[in-house]
Length: 127
Length: 222
Image (cartoon, rainbow over all chains, first blue to last red; front, top):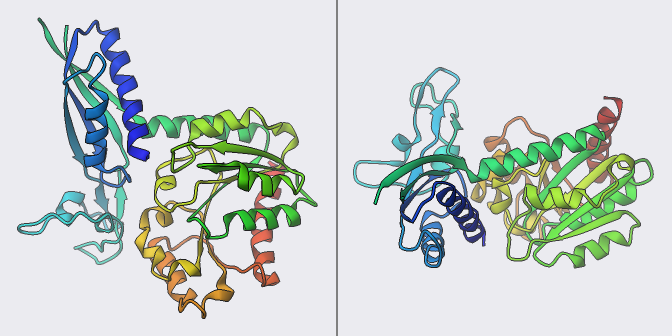
């Protein structure tokens, strides 16, 4: 399972950074997930939560931020991908929103830049 | 107690890509052309690799990394053809990653290899997120998966260098349109070659072989 191994890798990093910084405990772990990866944020959170039970990060809060790609067109138009997956009252959770979207200015197909990250953004530790 | 926020900024997927770059440099140093075959279970990846070895093995020295959750079955099939075959058991993993390939490369005599074929684990989702150090990403999709399969998996078709629409001889039997599939690939990725192949159609297979051999020749000259 993709998310589990990624969660393990994240935890290995979190533990080693915490130890290097002389942490006594970890309050929270903030992870950024690109919308263009195939990582399921709910599954990743679940895996991370189950992994923080038996180490220095026991009880740490898992905070997940979604990272939207920047949509760019040859005509010069660009905007955050977030614009293209939100209508008035709902968010469309479909990867095609970023891969198959015409430019609102000229109608050409736009390119997505970024959104392929899986970043450990920060760790809040107690020293 | 002191609370302290550490800004980390470590990208786990980019770490894989960096390792993939390292793999690529090793392959480049030895003028090896590396191809990553991605596709669903049953799309025809292993058979395509077998045929490629039989045809191109006359001219090039080929090695294979066969990745699978249980890898020795495909590896066994391929090893029968007399080429170096490294089975990579991914265990629970749904894809090959750069670390697994780095380890496999240690068992291959790269100095005496021209082409490295890497068979990814069978699915169209997870392999899309991982670079291995390959020069060429090839997606193999068969008509039997249904002709809407391309649009269902846009990420992998966006990130590939060649798309193969395989088992084209079965299209009519499974009510699939290869024209629609080709059109869908072109819509997502307009500039890549799209080959329609069947192992029963020599001309289409020759087209694939010549695509690969011209790329391998280019590298040899470099």
